Length: 330
Image (cartoon, rainbow, N blue to C red; front, side):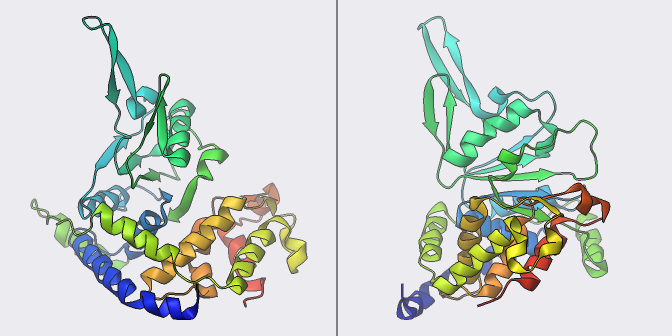
């Protein structure tokens, strides 16, 4: 794609930007602040990826995801993950009918467009692994039959980072399947005051759907056509390789702090989300700043830090920041 083609995309990008702003306005009727989380949910939806939201209870994680779903004219299911949940509760099962001597398929809540997996780390490994095929292949197998999931299909999972009792850590293979991992913090004082005013009432504002699955599919086509220069591609590859071989990028001090670097999925997802970031910013081309903007959310759950890093009270976010500060920008 050439710069001329990027200019041709401009009118369509502008039209979709207005639609996305309408959706933000609708969500803003219910949710105060949290624009970062809402934009990232939209990003995952357009980039056709899944999202893991981590934050302490009471930060409107579930409410924000539910409100975004209400603003989209599409299917939505919510599952409260608990230690006694079974895979069949998620994907469904086949029920034998003696009268007709055949099996009736009873589909589970996973057969939807937007699936809210609330407190995903409370479910045992069997249930978590049942999500793997659905998240990666967009299909589930019940008995001997494989069933396609609706399009679009997006898993929005939440987890509580502070309460460890009765939780099951997510396997690395499953964490890697999430395109983005968000960390949600407290609102500021004015926002908290507005939350108090709104939520102290019995009546809550409603949300009108402003987006359809067809809109999302068209946005995906436009985002795919966003121009990604080869120099920016090289920059993305350099950032990911710096997590694996820091010494090659004058980051020798990180060698002992990183146990395992980011997988090739990180490279793919960085390119996809950088394109969507440019699209949401109203541009037909990707800049290195787009990569820096989405980088922490794509990489934070893909870098496994060492015991030495933990002893120094460092997080994967600290390491990512150091990499972006050091790797040469084109």
